[in-house]
Image (cartoon, rainbow over all chains, first blue to last red; front, side):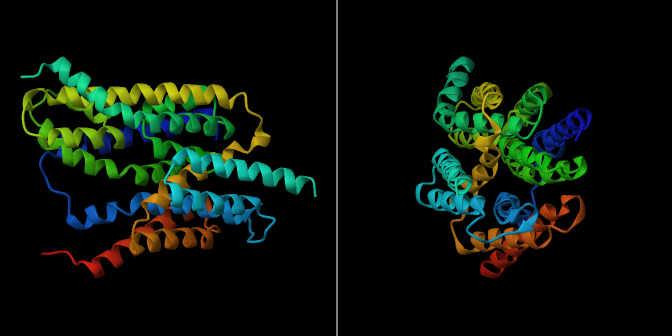
Length: 110
Length: 232
C-alpha cells in the first residue's frame, strides 16, 4: 500500500471508530441495543483474532505446512500454552519470540 | 462534595495499574508497525487518530500481508464494533454534558478507560463531577499509549529484521484470545473461525478473514442461544 493510501486508511478507520464511540453518547441517546447483538458482541474479538492467528501459524510460503519444519507453528503452540497457563501478555510474547529465534538458529545450522 | 480536580486525579490514579499492562503493549505495537514497513509518522498518527490498540495490531498485520485498504477498514471496523456497547453503557451518565464534553469523552472511550469509568459511574454520589474522573482516566491512558507507541517506533527502527519481530503481533493476539476462552462455547467459536480462515485463504482480497470471523461469531451465538435462549 502506498503512503497516500495508508493515510486514507487510518483516517477512515479513525472516523469510523470515533463514530462507534459517539454512537450512543451523542447520536442515538437512550435506545437499547438488541439483546441478540449484545450476545454476538462477546464473540467478535475472539473470532476476528483467531482468524488472524491461524494462517500465520499454519501457512508457510503461502501453502499449508503442519510439519516440524514449520517453526512459527511450533513457537505459536508454545505461546498458546504459556498464555493458557499464565494469562500474561508480555510473557506470552517473549516466550513465543524467544522460541522462534532459538528454532531459527537451530534450523539454519542443520 | 469533591471538586472537579480531585475527581480528575482520582480517575488518573485508578487508571495507573492498567497502564502497566498498556505500556509494553504500545511498545510492541510500535515495533510491529515499523517491522511491517509502515513509516514512523503514520505509525504514530495511527495511535492518535485510531487510538484503539487491538484494531491497530490488526491493521498492521493486514497491511504487512498486502491487504487492500477497503478490507483493512472493514476488518478494523468489525474489531471496533464493541465500542458501540461501551457508548451505550456510559450514555445515560453523559446525557446532560455539553456537546464538546461528549465528543471529547467519546474520543477517549477505550476498553481500558471504560473499565474503570463505568465502575465509578455506578457508585452513588458526586454525580455532577464524574465526567472529570472519565477525563482523567481517558487522558492517562491516551498519554501512556502515545508515549509507549513512540518508544516502540524508536526501538523498531534499531532492531534487525532477523529477530522476527513481525511475529510479535500474532503472539499478541494469542495472548489476548487464549485467556478469553473461558468456556466451551467461546473455544468452539475460536476454533471455527481459525479453521475457516485456513480453508478460505483462496478468497480474493483477504476477505477470508472477514468471512472466518463471521463464521466464528455465528457458531458462538448459535451455541449460546441453544444453551440459554433469549427471553421474549
